[in-house]
Amino acid sequence: MPDMIARYAEVVGPHTMDSLKIIADMLRGKRIVHVNSTKEGGGVAEILSSMVPLSRALGLDVSWEVIEGNPEFFACTKTLHNSLQGMPGGLSEGQVEAYAETSRLNALRLGGTLEDADYVFIHDPQPAALLGLLPGRRGKWIWRCHIDVSSPNRSVWRFVKKHVEGYDASIFSLPDFAQPLPHTQCLITPSIDPLSDKNIPLQKGEAERVYGELGVPLDKPVVLQVSRFDRFKDPLGVIESFRIARKHVDLRLVLAGGGATDDPESGAVLDEVQRAAAQDPDIHVLVLPPDAHRTINALQTGAAVVMQKSTKEGFGLTVTEALWKKKPVIGGDVGGIRLQIINRFNGFRVRSPEGAAMRIRYLLAHRWKRERMGVNARQYVLENFLITGQLRRYLSLLIALDSPGGEWERWI
Ligand code: UDP
Image (tube, rainbow, N blue to C red; front, side):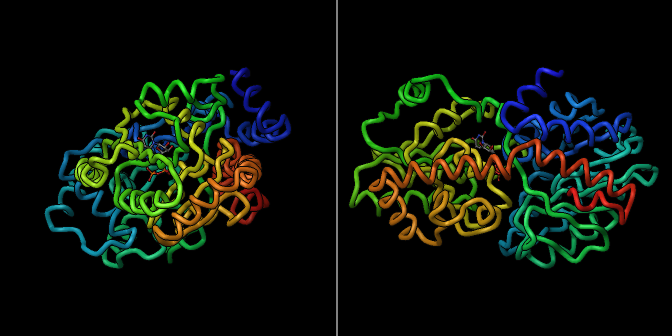
């Protein structure tokens, strides 16, 4: 698919694509498998949807497997996720059993593919136990942690650690997330795909048309947050910020999101959000289907200000997506958002609804600042957070794992 490579080269430059091709050529004939827990919804699925086709266009033998589980299993992995991000609580005996049983069933289903692979990327804790259940594996296994494990619940971390310490390497998004583990750990940030429906430039007037179709008038500036309905994304805090800002400036709020097949809590969070927004004609809660990528693109393109007021965040692809569209972002001062937002340069990091409201007012009152920060925002993403760079680091890690101590470590 040389066409695809040429289109990436138009965005990132031919030299970047040439060096990616050289690195990919070193892995030709090797089998690489990614495993995660959902085909759609959330950042991991978003990245793999782009990384797998790009890897194949570079001539690599890459596949993507999704583990299957019942509601008890996904209730357990949601608890794992929440408590690794610091919520109190732990796994019940039943949940531990559901995790073990589902892992066994997936090991039976995927074992052949995984044991034969040269490299396996296991994304997040959901499929992490597969390694211990496949003693015949011959390749290198990498645990890719996408979540904010800066202050995990210790007992739950010990449970996860037991499953991941046998891996050949782990990847985290931030130094704050690194953990005591007996293998190589590296830092690789997630990324967005500039050619995906979510991030390509839209046709003139498309954003306005989409807002119209969704019943959101563009008669006043729009503040937007796009997120799964998840408490760590703090949708209620966004509503509070909006209400404080609205005392001073006329605006609308759009909260757009959906669920993910591996997230059993989104319905309850959505109910809370809808209750908090009820009777307020300036708050629009949009429940989107999982493939609404172009719609999200239009919402981000047409917004005046984008928020991501998370209280924990592994990375926050929605921040990068908005920065790429030249929107300054107001984000929670946590996790991966700290890597992406530089105060006053491309947005603001905030710690309270009051702080967020002040930044909303500031950005709406200073259009030229908004525009200048937007230009910085796009350039920053171009230099740091595009899929081509992330893939180069992943591939360099694979090469480095086969030649420890070699110069490839410098490329990661
Ligand atoms: N997303 C989506 N539909 C939704 C909500 C989110 O397509 O209803 C996308 C969003 O645009 C982003 C990803 O899902 O690409 C979310 O990744 P992020 O890292 O922001 O958060 P996560 O959901 O992984 O915690």
